[in-house]
Image: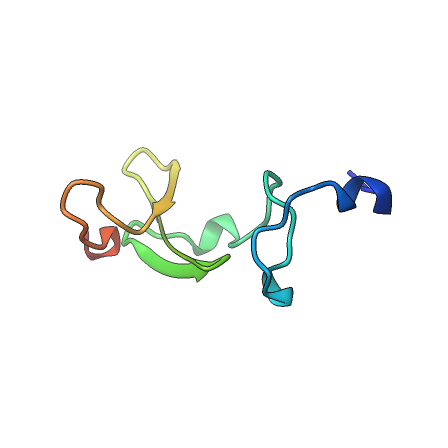
Length: 77
């Protein structure tokens, strides 16, 4: 999908940091699927910590790296 200047000006931005000045609600490639292993991998994108790993059935899982109950990092397993 190609966005023209008029449309992109109306899209809210993620951050005031020019490096992360990207439109919200779009898909952004972060990894190649073959790079994701079963061990949780922590990374930071768009100013937030994330965790990604491959589940036992082979599907990928990604979430913010914070347990909502304990506040612990999900990357610790």
